[in-house]
Structures are given as C-alpha cells and as structure tokens.
Image 1 (cartoon, rainbow, N blue to C red):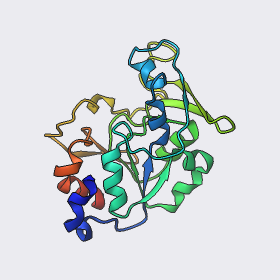
Image 2 (image 1 turned 180 degrees about the horizontal axis):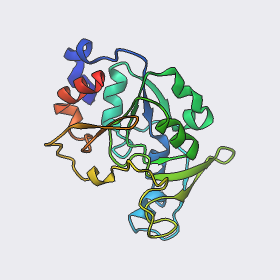
Image 3 (image 1 turned 30 degrees about the vertical axis):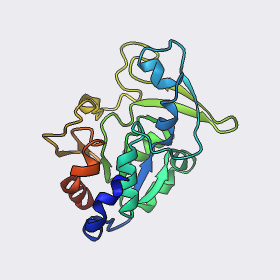
Length: 207
C-alpha cells in the first residue's frame, strides 16, 4: 500500500483544488495477453484488439502506484471512458493529471490536448489511437507507433510525444518541463513514487 507512506504528510500533499486524475483503464486493458501490447512487443502479428476492463486493477502498466497515491491524497478520479463518452467533463477541472494513458480514443486525445492545464506525469501517454465498441466492450487499435505502417511514430502525429523518456525509471534528473497546455515529466516515476516521491508530489500539487 504505497499510499500509506504519505500518511504523515497528507495535509501538505493533498489536492488543493479542482484537479482530476485520469485512470488509464483502456491502457490497462491493452496490456492483457494477446492484446495490443503483445503486438507491439512482437509476440503476436495480429493482436490489435482487447476486451475493455470493467474494474481498476491498478497494475504497473496502468500507473498503479501513482494512481493509488494520488487517489489517497484526495484527487478526483475519472477515466478514459468518462472522457470518451463526455469530453466536456474536463471543463469541470482546473488541472488534469495524466498517468500512463498510452492508448486513447480520438475524442479523449482532443479533449486532453485542448485543456489548458495538463500534467503529463508519465511518458508515452497519448501514443496510440483506439476505438471502443461499447456494445461488445471491444477495443481496436487504429493507429500507433509502427502501425499500420512502419513510418508512424505516434498515432496522432502529436508534436509533444515524449516516449523517449519511457525507459528512464531511475528519475535521477527528474524535472517537469513546459509544453503548450501544461507540463511533462522527463522520466517514468512508477518505481520512484512509493518511497521517494515527496518532492515530486509537492511540485505536482503546485503546478
């Protein structure tokens, strides 16, 4: 329970405004066996589908540590599906915190990049475009790095793609840097947050 490491500092680190954390339930689903992540990992040549999960499993691929800590600290929680079905939901919030939302729909992508204050806490977010069939709860990959053609580096041709920082799990040179609609972190903080995330969480609160 990594969130309990911040119990004594709750008052200092707790959410101080209308801020929402977006839980990446589509990405969580895409990391199932024989799903989209297996296609990218080279384990399957035709795995471009996934079954949409109905529960937050708080896995590593879905930023489980970060989510648990931020939820504990009182940040509002919404997810990909909330935004896809009602993009205007983001208008309620002064700040949005994105986790490892690697797979997103076009509606979600548009809503996020047009919000004026987004903190991209995990690299590799907004990397692949998917569609969701809610009648069957099926997710299908539409466009992403190397799919459907090898020259594609980001499913939305997004100029702020920061996948280059995905493999930096040590976060020894951790910093937020500005982009057009917020800030991005230059490392993958999932292993840092449970025990050494105090300074990061403090800065996150004040961005």
